[in-house]
Length: 397
Image (cartoon, rainbow, N blue to C red; front, side, top):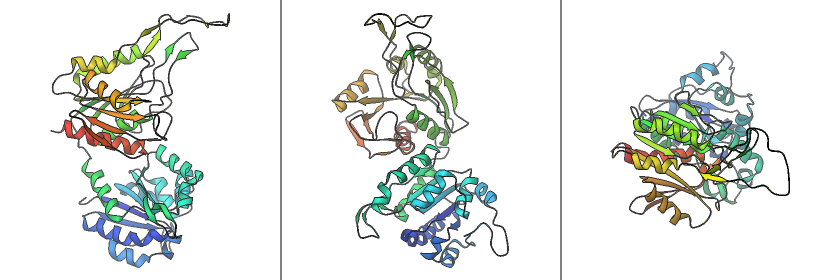
């Protein structure tokens, strides 16, 4: 943390009293901290307190009595922007680009990673509008610290408490410690669905969006890895410009692209949802509707992960995914052995918020020797952090 430039944005919540401790701990860890406050935040904690702790002037408006506080320069200055507490109002403004205070102005100018620590009452946190806004921020790459459970300002008990200052500092330390962690490592990621054509306009596919694999590619790139992403048909793409994306459509195309890249990789993460079967014949013209039924002969696609598992070198690390609906653990363990993975990531369609077409995921990581790590429901960006942490134990031995 020594010398890292951190913006601490404080919005109007009773949890703002924790910002004094958070600021002190960040400064104590060696960070250079610039505090921004909304007008309402000053009702809960004094700017003078935070200025004393940060040893800098606190900005609470874009234009002060004597000067213009350059939000663009501030956005370019920081290595990390932490908004804590992040109220429902501030989250909504960030999600929709409403720029009416110094905090949101700097957010829209920031090129650094951004993290929010939400703080609000239980019903506000659970409200669909808030959750939609959280989803929009996650989709745009903002990281979110989990809310705590306990007594709230209303007297209710439940989710909505801001993460404790020590937890936020631990997050920041982990974030900076992982930078360039994988520098010099080449990592392959497969992601997204495959489309197996029936004719020029129809295909056999699945509901995968590629969000999970893309999040993994971005996280590995953030840690300094040279990432090759073999990506099936999706409208999504990595946020990192350093990820080399190889776009494919069919399972055979994904197999060929993977086989070409894999031998030079230090690790490979097979998160793509490759169609198990493809039509034996694809019509060259659109198939016309005739009769009451239609038969399509299917043939197996190559099992990409299994094929790479057979040719992997002792120095290579391979990671698999298992999306299951029944006998989840048993099926995942079978895949772990059969496909020669070092570890496998399991998620179940029985878990709400997990699987395809979601911004969140709930996983278990199964290692050899029956070591199992279970994780809570998180954004896919945060799940990608957990997977990268697991990979680190193997790749950096």
